[in-house]
Length: 200
Image (cartoon, rainbow, N blue to C red; front, side, top):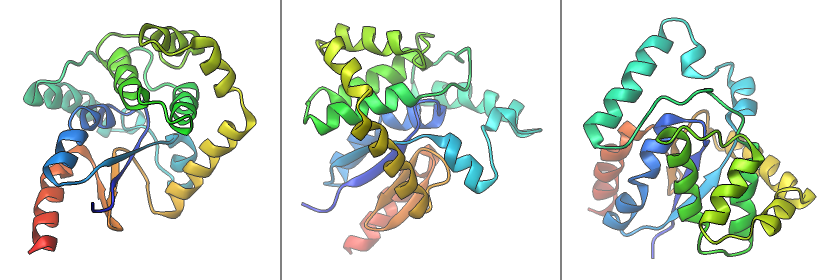
């Protein structure tokens, strides 16, 4: 099978949430798999000189409007969360731990965290919330809490962020397919057309 789609995401990104609801279907359509790669945008923004869209002059009001509009157009449940944005280090470390364990619940857990924050108003920056959602999915909360605290998981997240920066990732969702970069949920159709052209 062809190489996977590297799907970089931060749990605090609305557009990454939207993409997370459809990336698996896109991959299947393109005969690919998805490599879900949680990262933190904070360190990336420091390098790129950017910041959360809603904190930027003029762009903020547009972004909030576009979040709601995009959700409506694609039929994705969405309620502008508060607080926003949030730190997502616990969610990212939890994801990496499950992936390292080979847990088949890792991807559904990612999607559950996204929905909890962007559709249900749950603050997934809080460790207790992450663990509660894990428990609801049959993931051992105590084991997960211990995993999140492991030094190797902390270092792995730092490595993932640094590798993302090295690959030119400056926002999320960010997809890299056969070394070709695509930024944004609105680039899904570009991905389809590019892969079709590459195959011809």
